[in-house]
Image (cartoon, rainbow, N blue to C red; front, side, top):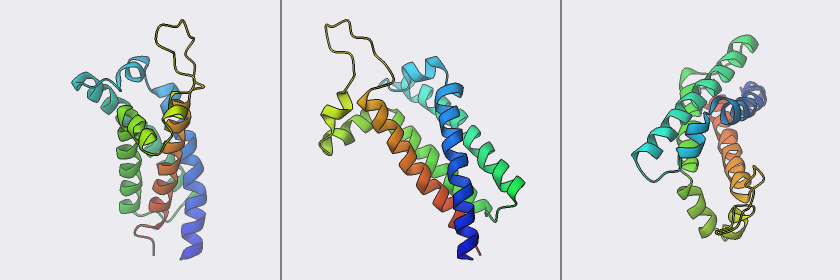
Length: 155
């Protein structure tokens, strides 16, 4: 039923957004954050560990609202939503991928906004273009994940 899918989407999306914020900023370790963009096996492993803990948090959040609210989520919808969230999160968090996408879309200058300048004693902060584009990418795919969770296998 369409109304069931709409209600499920309306409950799943905020649970994913809250879980995303907690997992990306509290659960992710400093080591993972500093190394997940490295262009080697250590970078891939750091990113994998981050996305594994991230997906555990998002899965628990969706599982909690599914159970407590008695939402009509199918196992296939749950798995597909979590999978799309995890894969797209990993893709963006390797950093070179999102940087390249920003270049291709004409957003390279915005991507570099606020980044330390070579040879300068700049103070890096969370207020960079790269961070804003990273977070908006994740939110886009969390919306897709919520939609898939709510509709795949729905009666």
